[in-house]
Amino acid sequence: MSKYVSKITEFALDKLKVIWVVALWLVINLVLYIWKFKQYRQKGAYEVMGYCVRFAKGAAKTLKLNMALIVLTMCRRTLTKLRE
Image (cartoon, rainbow, N blue to C red; front, top):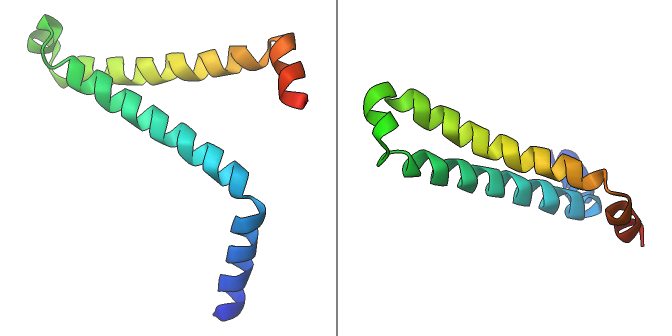
């Protein structure tokens, strides 16, 4: 058992930056989704469509963020700055 724990610990220490970035990305997506989900409680569309509009708007907001991140990596100057 300790052999597996030491391997997992070693892997986590080697990939600490990657784990941190992925965790940050997940937290940002979750916060953005919850914010938009709660925001549509006060809109008139909620009374007509119920929870469907809240789920759709929350998912759309996170999708917009992720698409912006993808487009950002396609910029030549951004890639040059990241490589430096």
